[in-house]
Image 1 (spheres, rainbow, N blue to C red):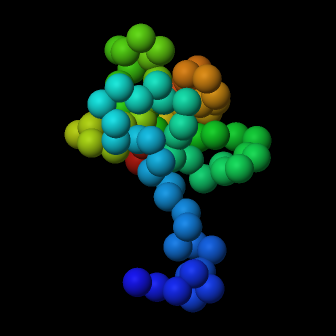
Image 2 (image 1 turned 45 degrees about the vertical axis):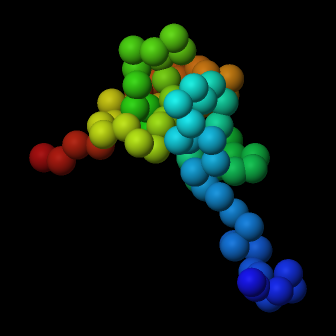
Length: 83
């Protein structure tokens, strides 16, 4: 076991917190905005659900990326394209 003082701050971070539970409410998102980001561009993997947004780690597809992700709101969907 690693001694408490030997751990780096990054060792305490879990960017996928609450993204793999079967009945997650999607309040959390795995975006790079933590803790106080202005834009929360995050993936939406299930646009058909109750809230129409959210990210689940075990989903096989990403429908789009949206900007808000605060209290189950998805905002404007965007997708990267080439060409």
